[in-house]
Image (tube, rainbow, N blue to C red; front, side, top):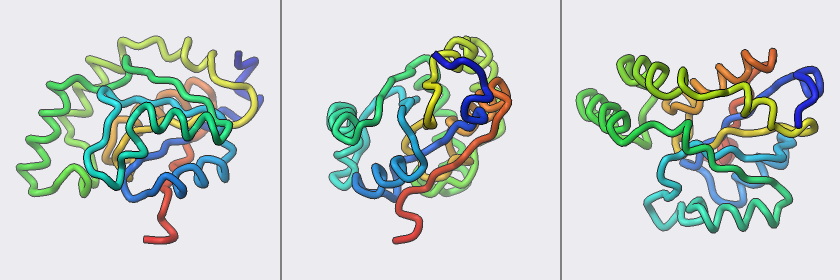
Length: 173
């Protein structure tokens, strides 16, 4: 249990799958002293052979072998309806999910009202490890293109801390 936000400054990290390999993903987590990954995906699979390592059971095994904890928080995942709303906006502006740069305004509004405002983030914050960082994980590489940025901002506010956005593979791209 987290004793207080002052224990580690209340910093929460975010990380995405796209643009990384299993090795770069794990190295980035270790380099940032992440001890717990909070998976905020609805469906814990990723399409494409290059991302098979990020499918739930494989990811959990790799994290366990790396000494990093794992927790799935499905209550923070967007609904299928919300994801389809974002996909429609992506199609309208002509970008694919892997190239999205920002979330649609209507998606953000609805995600906050329908999901984030209804979740007890205080309980989640209180359950975070006292030492080391926790990282919210989803698939999009850039946090601005993913709901995890909204969760991270809210959690950091509760913890009186900040957000550290991790981007595995950035140096090798």
